[in-house]
Image (cartoon, rainbow, N blue to C red; front, side):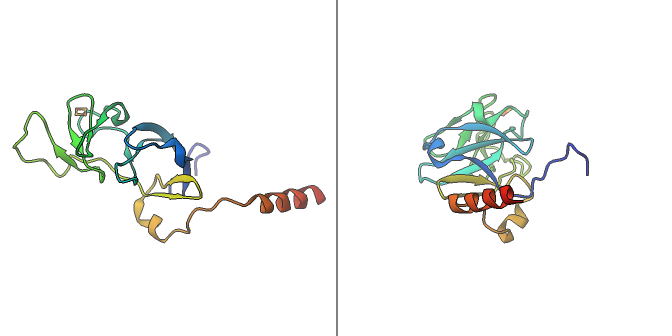
Amino acid sequence: MSPHSVVRNSWYVAGLSKDFPKETLSGHVIAKRPIVIWRTKDGDIAAFDDRCSHKRFPLSKGRLMPDGTLECAYHGLRYDTSGKCVMIPSHPTGPISPQAKVIGFPVKEQDGLVWIWPGDPAPATSATSPTVASPSSWRRARSTATAT
Ligand code: FES
């Protein structure tokens, strides 16, 4: 493993729950991966690759539409919360290629934190839920470390 490689198949904290108000896009780099994250109208967290499938423009610079889709700021492709392109403004009635999509990432919200799995989504379903050590376990770890 290269000293510069990154573990992606793991849970990472993207931020505090309060950092994600409804319908506000935010761009992040987690495990060296650009990711756009937002809270939907329903209160769910959505996250996917922050690069449009068309010309790689950062989707976090786009806007959320009234129907809940994310519109790219460059040419206006719209994505649903799964990352699938559902509208191409220059071809509003034409077929949409199944390749017009962006990778979605598993997310969890618990303990006041938003967690994201920036790797292969399949192992995330069987992975242990992310946990934050309680302050008592931190004190216990610190006292053990200083006693040795
Ligand atoms: S780069 Fe996003 S629509 Fe063209």
